[in-house]
Amino acid sequence: MEILRKIATPFVAIWRWIKETAWVQPLLIVGLIFGVIFSIPSITNAIKNANKNEDNGLSYYNEIRLSLDDAYKGNSQVDQFFSSYAAAQGFKNGNTRYSQSDLDSFKKEYGEKFFLVFAKSDCTFCENISNALIQLRDNFDTTYKLGESSAPYKAYSIVCDQDMGDAKDYYIEKDAFEYILDDHSTLFEDMVKFGTTNTYYNNLGTSEKSTLKGYIENFLKSNNDVHVPCVVLFDLTDNTSNNGSEWNYIANTVFFEIPSNFDTNEVTRANFLAQAWYGLGDFKIKK
Image: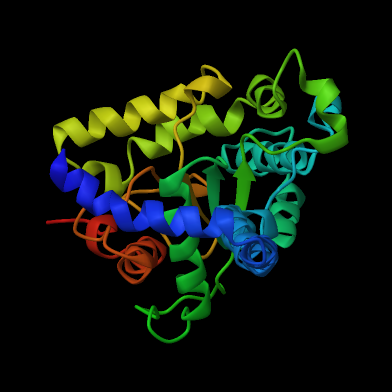
């Protein structure tokens, strides 16, 4: 106690002097006010930076997004994509309801080759994929030119929990992406087929195969079960095969995770995506 009393004595004396010295008090008040005023910009910047960091994860996805707006009416950009896909894949499957023009329309609208990423706004791993895609886009013709490709870099995203803004009242009973899952099962059913027969899947270990298959099948359940990020590579170039045999799918690869040996930063993750694009590494037939 004696030690504490000695430590406190100078502070007590200062406090007593402040109370007894009238002219000091206004100066302290003014100093406090100016201190608060001058600290406001720093506080504001800190808040802005925090929001910016949070938004960065979605900014690129929003830039390349196929929108869910009007999903409750079956007229969103995502609806249009899935309908166009079903017609194009139907033609590839030999369904006489569809024609070459359906395949050509899909290719003209979306491209010969592209990534489609299913993401959510509160997903750290989705942000990792986003940064890797930006890295791949910006260095596609230099660092990540791992072979010959007739198709330029292209990517799309579907943000499964997209903010529906003023139209949110239409999605109280059912989420926007839930409408997609209910109305368009073709791609998700095909994902189970091509996602569990392609080269990448065949190169996985037994446990990894089971996990990937389970993640794909979750798309056939409900929005709450959807596992993200999910990356699907579509390829309509003249590549003869993805798995060493006749390949009849528009899409040829699906994965949900970056392997640990690539999951270091956006540079290494972009390299993994580039290998997927060119069919190298884990995406190449291993003899």
